[in-house]
Length: 406
View: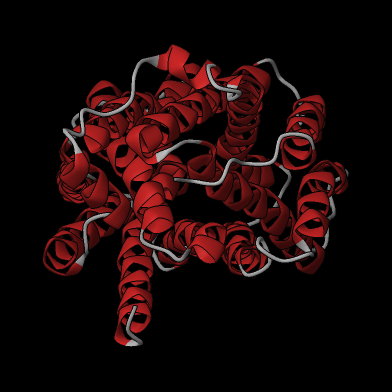
């Protein structure tokens, strides 16, 4: 092997990380839009808590379907083409969202946006893992994932400079940016090297059905991954969608809530970058412990209802550090659990399990809020869920180490 080959490989990996980071940045903006726009949507359409929960969950229903379809297509026709098509889909339907005439049409627009978001995620994770050097695969995926909370932080900033009646602007930003990014990715992104090698050796028809994940020693690893994804995303999406409302109900003003949510997302962005740089070092287990033990502790602190805005922003930011670092860890583990022939499908199903959690999360939030519980009681009610999810993730890290990819 010549010296130019490793340099070219490193250059290709860096380009993949950058372009996939841009895609997750777009996803992060869109995933935050529903929570940011909720106040304006309530003013214009007057939905009750249950209808608002359906609106919050619609995107994640689409994500669930899109993740399974996108993962399967990735193993059959390749990662890059499915990724570009998915980005275009969620960009177009995000732009269409402000044209909705009632809460039902808004909900359908969000569901169709979610189809594109779901199709993109398994391909982003697979590309980041497969185009990276073997000893940097977890770090590459974590760095790519860090675009998601940064996009959420951008969405929170947009909310600070718009009024509730201008809620449509967040969806316009969430639609225009991916439609700019999609052709850039189409031109510059390299197809997965591992998939290309597999396709050149034989007909790449993709992995088998769901039961293949339970074969050849993958059963325990797959089940732990699914439970961890389900509970982690249930927690994340309940917080993303309902935390602004809960904080406002506790007496905090719009700017204070916006700053707190910016801190939640920006703290998550920094933690995903940091945790990614240590996932292949001896500090890996320490990072896992800090993330998954820190979540319930910080949630308990936030539930006590700090009344000082500065302390609120700090606690919310550190909670974002823990919650989104946990997401980065799970996304970086997922592609290492499966061989190339079924990686897109395997990651797609893991993401889909998480999306079931992200569907349940906003609905659970709506149920708790609609039952008259205080914001503190809603957050405290999350603690058992967070503890079980953290335990499963820690067991996955210690007792079921990921397989080395082929």
